[in-house]
Image (cartoon, rainbow, N blue to C red):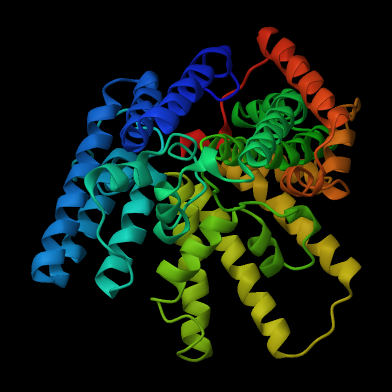
Amino acid sequence: MLFNSFAFLLAFLPLALGLHWLAERHAPKLRLPLLLALSFAFYGYWDWRFAPLLALSIGVNWLVAETFGKNKAGGLITFAIVGNLAVLAVFKYFNFFAGFAALFPGLPAPKLDLALPLGISFFTFHHVMYLTDLRRGEAPRYDLVRYGLYIAFFPQVLAGPLVRWREIMHQFEERPYLRADAAERFARGLLLLTAGLAKKVLLGDPLAEYANPVFAAAAAGKVVSVVEAWQGTLAFTFQIYFDFSGYTDMALGLALLFGVVLPQNFETPYRATSIQDFWRRWHMTLSRFLRDYLYIPLGGSRGGLPLQVWALFATMALGGLWHGAGLTFVAWGMAHGLALIAALFWRRARLPMPAALGWLLTFLFVTLCWVLFRATSFEAALAIYRGLLGLAPLGSGFKWRALAPAAAFALLGPTAWALAHRLPPARWLAVLAAAIFVIVLFRIGDDANYEFIYFQF
């Protein structure tokens, strides 16, 4: 059930809000079990066979936490974390690693025909964060309903943001509709939901029509002209931003409707003036996860420069692999790791970097790296890069009508988060949001609907 679908917007969401209001008003003890049931209904709508896997994942990890609370066996937590990652590896990476066996004559190269459960990377990382903090003595134990809701809460179960237990668990105890600012929070949730829908449907999806044919041509072995290469690359650069940040805005808005505040995940990343600044602004919750649960445990900046360089490179390479079971994703992560290492040496050398030049270099680097992220193979990526570097026919017919407003919004406009939280309540704002919502519905009804890019991860 896509957030940008009639089934969700006109059926599931109104029904869920109505049931939640009734429970919160007349049976508060049923509010959290109801939210958990709604979350499983939402998740199972995609494929009912995935719901038992999610339930088993929650149940096993909760039992591990309960057992650890009684005997404090740290090895049990380690075993559980390894088990979670192993399940993720089987579903997402088995065929990827099995493919390497084919490089050696005589070695069997088995393949598993398994459907990738939606959101498995995200709910696996939620388990890892909680279990790690539990072993450190930082996280308390929770009952099964609360822990299950932390993992499966439907606004964020499929594609984040990655929420730490300390950011959300205390909110489950509130009576959200009894707060003095309940109406204002609900209204801001509707604004975020509408803004996210508009970003996805009106800005992101039209760019897919510019990017997809170019990358499809590259994948088919065709020559990609200079104009086509720049059109496809820039279109995907802004498409993935509006697609993923639009999803995040919807997730944050939906959570607010149910009385829960989720953390911000994007802060104008294409205005970053360094690669380090970019990762502070792009998918911020993943960046924090990689820093706290991978980079620092690998040594971080505490063990000297060589260890810090290794930690940066390994963290970003693994971050690339997390995004997809393909060498192009690993190369994308490694490229960002090398850029972060270069930036580290630049800072240590105390060399100046004008803000304008820093922005230009960062934007160009990030844009060029998106080719690896989007291309289906290195051969397809090389075809795009040849065009970008002018090593192909010039071509003609650069499409800009959808690209120009998207670029303007991404580079100059305010974020949906800022608009929703800073604009004062006003009737004109409500009318404008309603009009945009209706326009989005007409656009959805025109069958111009795309799945969210990050659902594949």
